[in-house]
Image (cartoon, rainbow, N blue to C red; front, side, top):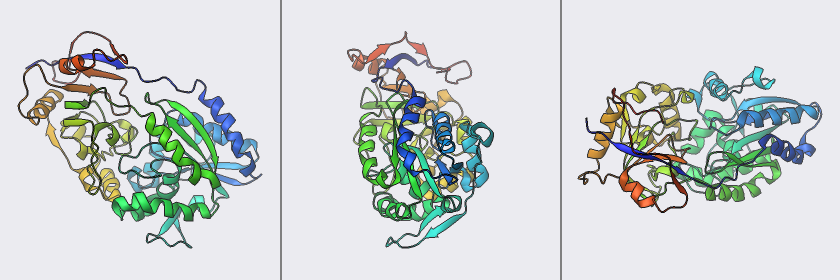
Length: 413
């Protein structure tokens, strides 16, 4: 067995994370004091994305609502995720530590929706029935560049109001129109939804390149459409990237819905694979290997088609019913195609290298990462290390290390 030795390095991104997220959240929530009415029933929308400090922020929001004499409850605002079932969406929240017992309020998980009227969009507009029947909703979500498209509004409060609160019906209605639905119909649909007055406010979160909370912003519902684009640009300027743009093989230890909406962040790997969307100019990666699927994904392997090679271990964890429900709702079928399946991690690398064509021995450009949300620590081959050795943001953490154990599995990261 040919040995591959890589060197572990740390990529030092700016450390601009909040020192006390709870304190910052509590201070920001005061901006929403005027929208909470005594005895009102207030839904708190929580999504399916992995969000740093999400449990603490949800609890602070719930406490804030209770302190003003209102009655909060949680709504899973996650479109068709969780297999488009109320039980599946409850499981996703539970995987983030959010249960009725942990946060002290009911969770009204329902796929029922109400169709809204009064708009001029070609798509029908839906809202979760528990949200519609409440006295108002406060949304909590991370604002970040989306993995499918580029627009004024990408991942954030606006998209959550349209697709997350729209449940499977709302998600399917937008995705029916492909990229145009995401870029053009989300803003038009949001106008109708926000026009109902049901969206009282939102808590927008921004994470830095280290995947840590760097900003919390509480925004009244009437201001979300105006303020979110500026937050998106802040998020875009703080996203992580690789220290090089040319990579032969990228080894990804794990993918999953808690890491990215597409399982693998397309902004990181430079692949989108959606008809009509221009592929990113960088980075250029010849082969991508993904070795495992996170438990928090509950078998949802959407985004698997972004890889070239996966392991049998990952394949065996795929829940095809859940995955295909999410993929078919999105309409981006390329994302659900199964790559070449290798029997073990070492074989996966061999196949990925073969996919690169002829490479000079010893000059292979290989990078290994834990997942696309964590780019601060990498394993790199000699060719990559030589390119970045003078980069002041790079710290070498050790000597060259064999990547595989006797069972041909990757050693722990």
